[in-house]
Length: 239
Image (cartoon, rainbow, N blue to C red; front, side, top):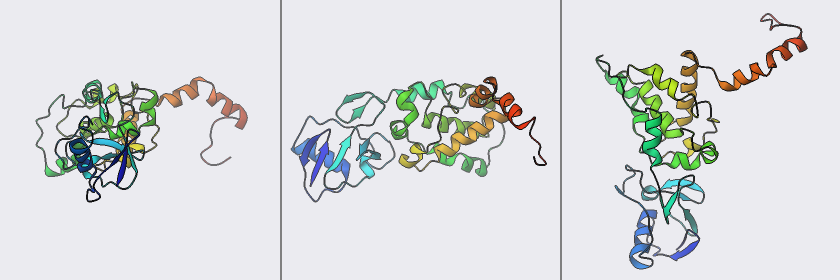
């Protein structure tokens, strides 16, 4: 079986089906200098994330097939071969304050735990950042996993300081997301990142924030133009 890694073709044993096993075989038998990351080998650590035929996958949980094309993640600096610089993880989580900041003394129930269980399963593999069209043009965007982690703490009964967390995600945050859902498609934990960001948008409005798109439309005279065209304000009972 042939695999194409960074435009280099490698012939591997046909008995190998797992992509990470293929990387290890190549390193041991063909190219000792091939660089890639891995850790747990069980889909938990997220370190082996790569692009397979243009789609982000965990190498340790992905089966390979003839002429698969493997490349490093997008939107992140490549340090060598299939290894990318993941320093954005710490930076984005810090900027978004995606941590428990003010702890409540309220008793936590199992239902409270289940409310944040899915978001807590994020393995920070950076697949969502690689697939994100907004992050590809604006690296100041807080991005998918940082925002879904914020939602995890906004929805956490133990967290008191909800308002501050919402305040921090207004610029280069929730309103910059196009809600395209690309992050959902590649998340190995099946987290509904798009849904979490949409909920954060709704919570932002409920807590005094305004979608800047609406604000811009209002400032541009959209409302007055609408009134002039249709002869005044909207009539809820009909035209």
